[in-house]
Image (cartoon, rainbow, N blue to C red; front, side, top):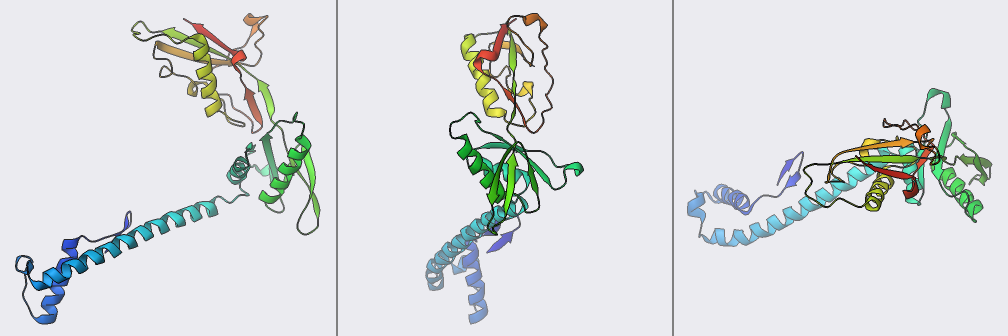
Length: 275
C-alpha cells in the first residue's frame, strides 16, 4: 500500500497484489511465471481470493488513516484557536446562543479584554442573563486578563476568590437604507413588488451583517437580487428624518465600525426608489 502526502495511504489494486504474490512465488520456488503464464494456475486461483482479502484490509486501513487525519486537523485547529483568544471567545458565546464581538488588541489595552454581547437588556430576566454571561466569560477568558464593560457581576472562582467580570452592550445605531433601482430596458421578467424587494434587502442584511462588523453596502444587494434592474445603488443614513427628508446625509462608502457598533435596520427604515 503506497503513501501520498495529499491522499494518505492508497490501497493497491488486485493486479498489483497478485503481481507481488507471483514475484514471491518465483523467488521461493525457482519458477519463472510471467503475468500471462501465471493466469489460470492453481497458484493464481488460490492467491486471487487472498488478494481480495488483502485489498479489503488495505481499504479499511486507508479509511482509518483518513479519519485520523481529520481528527488531527480538528485537534490542531482547536489548539491554534483556544477559547480564550478573540475568535475563540466569539465562537464560544455563539455556541451558547449569543452574538458577540471582541475589541482588537492594541498595546494600550494590554491585559484588558473588551467583549460586547448583543442581548436584550430590556428582558424581564436580564439579571439572570447577565449573571449567566459573566459566569461564562469567567470560564473562557485567560487568567490575568481584566474584562472591561458596563455590565458586571462578581463571580466566585474555583479557588474561592471573587472577581468582577464585565461586558458591554452594543452601541445601537438606528439606520435608514435607501435602495435605488434602475429598471433595465432589456427586462423580460416581472418586476418585483416594492414590499418583496425591501424584505429581500432586509434578509440579506440580517444574514450578512452582525455586531462589530463594517457595514458594506455593496454586499447586501445587487442586480442578481433584482434581475429586472440594470443598476442598483444602496445608501445608508444615520440622520434621516421622514419629516425633513431633504436634510438627510446619505452615504455609500463602507462604514468602519467599532467592535461594539450595531447598525439597526428594519422594514420601516428601508426606502425604495425606482429610477
